[in-house]
Structure formats: structure tokens, C-alpha cells
Image (cartoon, rainbow, N blue to C red; front, side, top):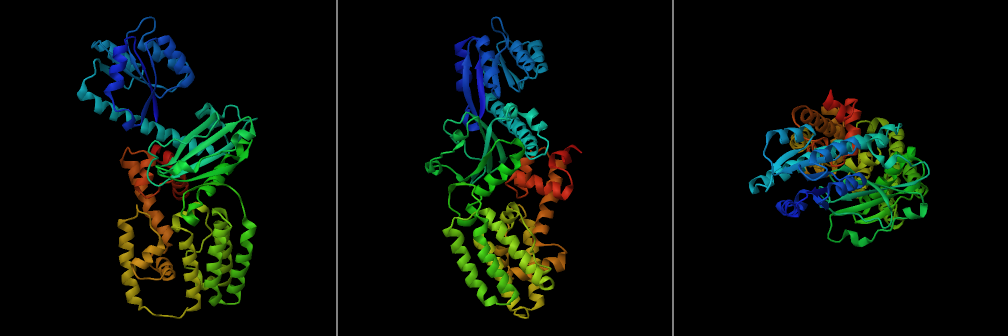
Length: 478
């Protein structure tokens, strides 16, 4: 919510402004109203609201004085001036001081909706730009930019830090506020259209023992909440973010809503990795289905998380490629991080299904149950479908069923026909479209990420930089 205060020496004017707009519908919340400009400036200096509606002529301190004093204090506060004076010089002066708009009172009812829509768009773009800068600074080795963007990190040398990430089922969280008890210092930043990051800070470690009620999921679109470990080192911020994201990604395994704390259990997975490696080397592919079924149960029983999934995947890939490189060189058997795994597979069940298809393929390597022409025709249809639906969630498992081609054969055909993997083809499409939108539109980077199929801005930023060599922000500027 964007915070608003109203300043006018006439109470009836304050009431008129309060009642004129549907504040909550557009994401605004009135947090104060003042008939004294002196009290207003004190409040502004302490709370730094997003927006101030102010009269222009008031005793002692005018609306223009209020704007000037706020700028002198270095506060990032926007103003809308509401005045009973229609003179051009007043409006000109207000705009020169940076006012977003100059309105006459009483407010024209026909101008109310266009004004609040304009303000909502302004703050949406402003927050998006700030989020982008903060997200880049959070994971940069040099934290000086981060400290210049927000005073939250001015004095963290003796403070304890913890990160909480919240995923929602749909875009935005419908104003759902997360309450963290008595924790006094909380920094919030949107990590994407379905993901919000909270950084908690306290000089007492015990205060960061986050206690969230499971009832938080009732009546909200919150999907999962991940909680990191605790650190006193701001340079470990990237590590804390990763931990909380891994914890929140628990839904990849069980698809149930929940609150999850980061707890690594990598050693528990070793027995399955050893079993798969032995079966691969000894070509006992008939054992694989049984191993995978037991593995799915084991992961569920021990509440293993995304970190263990990543570890399992990369170890199995290493075993398969090391033993059957020639047979599997055209498959999408790459080492992946957790974001890439979530992008590629819908859930843990889907990942296990893909591995099982690999084992079936190795067992029946010479099986030619489908004619080459049939496979090519279905593959052509699949590629056309991807070209028209790149902005949707696309998983190879679903597409292979839809177009009647085994997942493994799909991997082969992508490499053989298009010279790239399925994931590489989809990513290239999305990044190409993102570049076009960055050049030709004024959409925020977050909006562009969503339009091309990325609901996690942080991941989109990484993928874009990997492909283009620079961040989306720098690409747009260049």
C-alpha cells in the first residue's frame, strides 16, 4: 500500500479529499491528516509517506514551503497540491517544486478517477524502478549502492539479519500484510509479481525467531513462506535470500501451502544417488522404477526440500552423462540450480517422470515404435505451439503428452532440428520478446518479465543478464 497524508488548515477540505477517492482500490492508505503544517512536517520527517495532499495557502507554512522543506531533508515524498486559487503562477510554482498535480477545490468529481489512476501508475513505475535497483544491489559484492538506496542498511554491523520470502498463487498479494510480531525493523521489496521479500533486522537474535500462524493462508492467496537462517553479516545477504527461496520452494515437492524454515539435509539423499549410480553402471534399468518410487516416498517422509532436489538432480546427471555420454549428449541433462529446475519442471513428480523416461530410453534404445516422419510432423506442431504460447508455463512433460512424443525423443529432436535444447529454445524466445518490449514500450521491467513468462523478476534478471551480458535496466538505458 502507498501511504498518504492530507494537510489543510480547513477540516472540511480534508474530509472532502478523504471521501473523494476510492483509496484502497488503487493501493493507497491514508495514515495521517493535519490542519497544522508544523505537525505535518514533523510527521513527514519521521514516517516519510509516499504521497502528501496539501493546500497551497496555510498559516505560517505554505504548501510550497512544505514541499521545499521536504526536499531539503532529502526525503523521497511526492505531492499533489489542492488549492482554492486558480492563478497560473501558483500552479506553475507547484509544478516547479515537483508536484504531481495541481487541483482546484472543491475537487471536480469527473477528475477524481483519472487523477487516482494517474497517481497509482506513477507509484507503480516508481516502485518497480526502485525494486530493480535494490534487487541488483542486494546480491552485488559491493553493498555501498544498497546503503545509498535505503537507510535500512545504514547500521547493520551489530544487527542480526534474516530473510523471509513469500510466494502467492496469483499476481500480487491482494494487500495481504504479513505480521512479524514484535520485530521492529522490516524491509519489504517485491521480488516479482508473485513473490515478496522481507528482510528482518534486530539487535537481539531471539527477536528474529519468526512465529507465523498457519491461519495466514486462510482467505489469502499466499502459497508458501520460506525463512532463512540468521546472520550478522550483510555480505551474506545473497546467501540468506537463496536459503529463504529454497525453503519457500518446498511446494515444488508436495504442492501444499506452508511455512518452511531452511534446513539442509543433503546427506540423506546419498543412498539414492549411490543406488541410481550403481544401476546405471551395471545397466540394471529394471530396478530404476522401484528406486524412483521409493525415493519419492523418502523425500516426502523426511520433508526434504529444494536443496536436496538440486543435489539429487545434479548428481544423477553426472552419473548418467559420465556413463552414457554418446547416447544422452542431445538430452537436456545439464547441471541446474533451483530456479532453473522450477522453470523446467512443474513439480518433483514431473522431474522423477523425466528421469524414469531416460531409463526407459536407455533400456529400449533400439525401439523404433514411431516412424521418423510421424515424429517430425508432431515435433513441428509442438514448435509452432511453443512459438505462440512462450509466455505461458511450458513443461516438456506436458508437451510430450500433448504431441505424442516421448520426452527423451523431444530432447533429441530439439538438438537435431533446432540446434538447441527445449529450455534454450523457450528462453531465447522469451528474452528476444523482452528485448523488443524494452525498446518499444514504457512498461516496467517487472511487467515485461510477466508478459514474457517470468513471474520471478529476480530470476528473469539473471537469465536476461546471462543472455545479453547486461541487466534489463542497463539494456533499456543503452
